[in-house]
Image 1 (cartoon, rainbow, N blue to C red):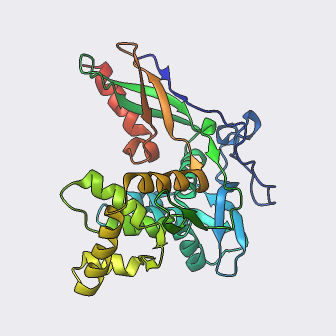
Image 2 (tube, rainbow, N blue to C red):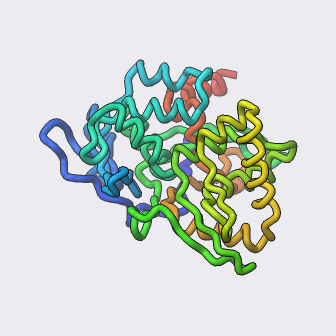
Image 3 (cartoon, one colour):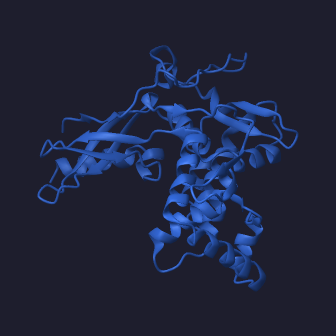
Length: 318
């Protein structure tokens, strides 16, 4: 079957550049024809994160040194008994030799938990590139009802665009909302991602999801302190009354915000948090119509590329 290229909506002209190589291994990644992981297939690579990790002393660590993942890490990915966020944290931490000057495994694991959501996604993409190749054959079903056929689309992961922060050491922001309320919020990290998954959601999952995404970032609204901690979210999930009452009260405050205030918060999150563009414009191989989609790093084929090739073989033989 002929493969159809899936082109990202943006290029990588401003992508972070790779750091200077150390004597133990080559540098790969970051964009550019002369820096592709596929050129040399190294087992180790040094990269520059989008925002990086700020330690307790305020020091920024942006360089990350990665090893190709092994069967040990594949087993971590396949262990569905562990919640997905914790699973991905352990997977990434196991492949990291250092972040900045941090080499202690326990401190590396903590740093991975506190990476921004964009950097966590970026690190997963870098690991996939380093361990397999820049080329990702992605299965995608056409969304048009009179087509609804699945195809395999080829994406160059080297072309993904990232969006850095103006000041990566600043992770807390203040905004005056359209209502006049003063809001303080923090950049979401892997810790907040664990929180998003831990806080029970109501019957309307989409609406609750929007509220929880705001809840996990907000520190305060005027004099009302929110600042939900992960241990509180876990206590709520375990039905501990004190945590449940406080989180539910905070959630009601956020639900009570007017739409303009909530939209202003989401816009501020988008403008100030680091970003990674996973959006795609795809032309269906069958009906030739164009549709928008996104790279899904949660597909088995992302970390296990033979999954897609096996599916393609089955399709071609039937």
